Image (tube, rainbow over all chains, first blue to last red; front, side, top):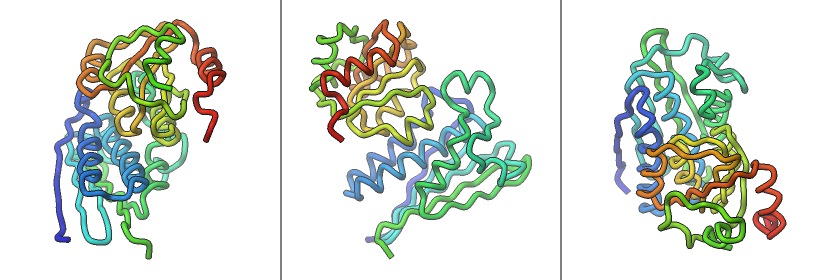
Amino acid sequence: MPSFKKCFNIRSRDFIHAGEASIAVQQLLKQMHVDSNLIRRIAICGYEGEMNVVMHGGDGLFCVEIDKNKIVLNISDDGQGIKDIAKVMEKGFSTATDEYREMGFGAGMGLPNMEKNADNMIIESENENGTTVQMTFFTKSA
Amino acid sequence: MKASDLAKEFKLTVVAGKDGLEREISGGHCGDLLSEVMANAPIGCVWLTIQIHQNIVAVALLKEMAAIILTGGNVPDAETCAKADEEGIPIMLSSLRSYEIAGRLYNVGVGRER
């Protein structure tokens, strides 16, 4: 199967469309008959990553790349970046505002959930210079 | 049991997503923290929450839920209803708290076989 890539735009603070990129990728993977458990893991990672961009990042890009042996989610934004990556990986740590917490976000579970559900996760970020999160999912057991 | 059966049995007001009322319900989940729901809600479940904003429809779709019950007399935003109608995710309202409605659902067998 040739490699296939598709990208979606994410807009900062756009709660109306937040989640749509993840839903589109979920539908795409279903059409491609990807294993349903794997689709569920990718849906969790995609949603958490997408909401992070909407709430904390700037505008962003949500890309899925489907290969023979793996699926890669690459979620990037041009926002404020992450000052201390080790800190944001701690369960329960969040910089969400009270408004977001009232909406049920900001539990400090997003990034830990992503790390748990991805086979590999890499975060690259520079203060004031955006963030890129790349998550890899292997479609065949090694 | 279907979402429409729950609506009838527990006198829930269906405010959106009527197209999805015949979907079979295979479990239940209570939760207001969206990350917790994303992590733990079972597919095909009915979700009890007090969150009313439209992002709950995205969560329901991604978790392949059967329906949402807004508890404690909470009423969804107009945008939430529009989105739920578009996607066929039933939103039903109850004046009972999540704990009480969850107990009643459990009593009729929802989420017992897992």
